[in-house]
Length: 423
Image (cartoon, rainbow, N blue to C red; front, top):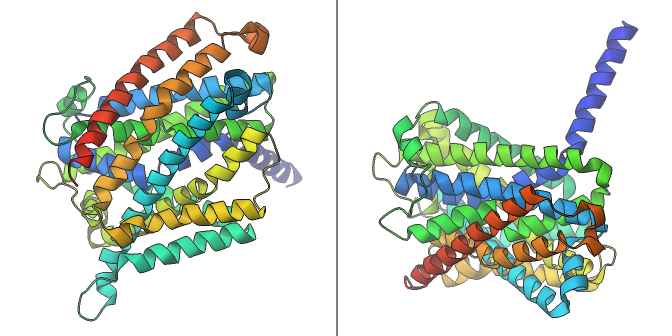
């Protein structure tokens, strides 16, 4: 009995160690698979079927390259990426990157809260006697206050872990749904060939797919997580495994979401005009319960992705100044409050939540080429990285990533231009 108990404890310890060792990767995956990802993947599958699968695959591959390179730079220098940028490229270019990241973060807050409040508002019809909706502004205020209260009291960790479980359940529902509405293999194969789909603002969708996966904010956060973990050069294999796991899981869940929409909505010509339209993607599995599953999942995904965006600027300030991340400073509390207010933009002033959400993701690729160039320079400077200077394989991968990021930057600009013309 003692031997069995000891074996059980040993197995439990290995599981806990594994879960702890891949923590940053799971965090990255959870950050990516949020409201923006669900909205963009469902919209893509509904409007273009599986024809944009190539954008998802390539963004996952190049995100892996960037994660690995950023982690390597952080581990070798012992400093976060942003602080390295300040040290070797000057404060003004670093401030420009911070401003670019904040633009991405603010637009993400606007888009995510727009979707969450819109979905819950539509769902609220069932709660009223005359089948009318409750104004989205009240839900936006309610969710913002909850997050800010948790931030103020520092009680957000358990809350975010609980949300992650709920998001995971929604992800499982999408994966199971794929086996019920498997798209034609020929359509999937065609989707592996890079091309810009005809009709609509496909540039915006493509940039959104890349922006929600290969997100500049996520990549900068990766550096912070690796730095906090205290990983050393002895942990390169661990870091690589962590990066692979995070990207494989990201691809599987994202592809499943796209495929369910391609299998359920695309054949019937159902496009995502309102956030609640995305419920159709889960109908084959959940039937009438699809609304409850989706609404619960989208709320959890939204809140779990909003919180990191609320605190991003304080994190960046701490990295820039190389000071301890103390979120109880009065300045940081004011900053987080101001960030939270951005979530009220669409509920107050109006707009199309789905289109705004996709556009907010499309902003991210704009700064990616600059981050990639800086990484290439840092990792090829012997004075900085010593014997860990990049080899041919990593330089080729980063150079290819730069070419891809430049194309995505172009696609984002074209897509955002088309988006602005809708107003």
